[in-house]
Length: 342
Ligand code: PHE
Image (cartoon, rainbow, N blue to C red; front, side, top):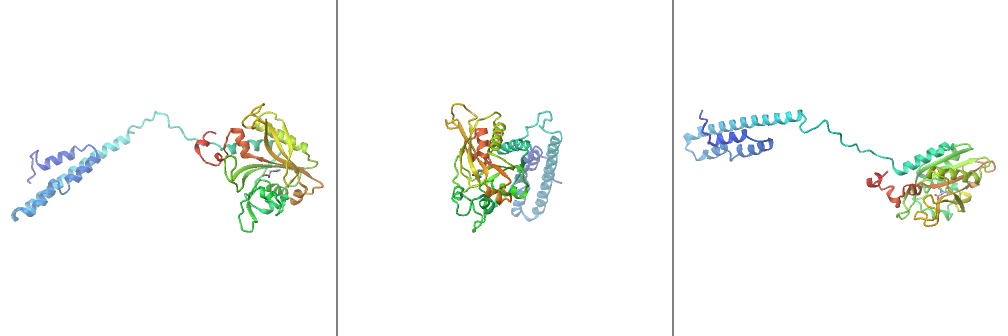
């Protein structure tokens, strides 16, 4: 063997470089340089055509020898570096088991969900049942059975998303259709609330959304009167704002109630006028009224025997009042900067 022991020979220098590689990346770079065409073995191979024929064989053998030596040194160093890395991983490297863990991200309930749950607690404590109904609804339940026939002008007041060309199926524009579904299913007397999403084909701005929340209330019984309605609404306000709040009724028109009212409450936030009540000290809280006899009939209930009241609480508005939210669009935005505040 003619392995050179000269410390300055290209082989010795290359071996020294491989053995001293600081990490796997440096080793890779050296592999490219030293085992390629411009490395010590590559150079000998390249010079072979220029040598006299009798020297060519030994030059080839020499190049192979060098290549093998380099490959050996390379894989030996690679193994060493891998062992070091593995050992570091096994001892945990810079992991400190005594440090406190990173805080867990916690989800929270949507403000609408919070208010719905509070109201559900309140109303179930008064003997109400919680009902649900389809969001994609038949025209019959959304309008017709609620005493709103096809040509009725009240239809224009509720910009409707129609789901079919014949207009038989709609996205419900209010939770009132569940009044009829409730009457079909339950024998009077009964009390029910229906929290849910409703949809209107409206231009969206800070106080209008195409999708918002309502909570319907329906009570049917013997001799149910406006007095019962007022009592229930006062209890509702006490539950929501934690104190007794004065209310007033103004006449309001909805085809499915007679008489119909707009119920206002004294502003819960001031006594002399503020931004929320627009300086009037009253806030418009909800429309309500005594269930129209035609509606009871549509639901299969005899209006000679039974009476009832209904209310349509604007949940989105109530949520905004309760938390001081000034733009309804936040509610469905899914924006974490908004949601994380609750
Ligand atoms: N459904 C009506 C609306 O959304 C509100 C309402 C409900 C009025 C119940 C009276 C009684 O406009």
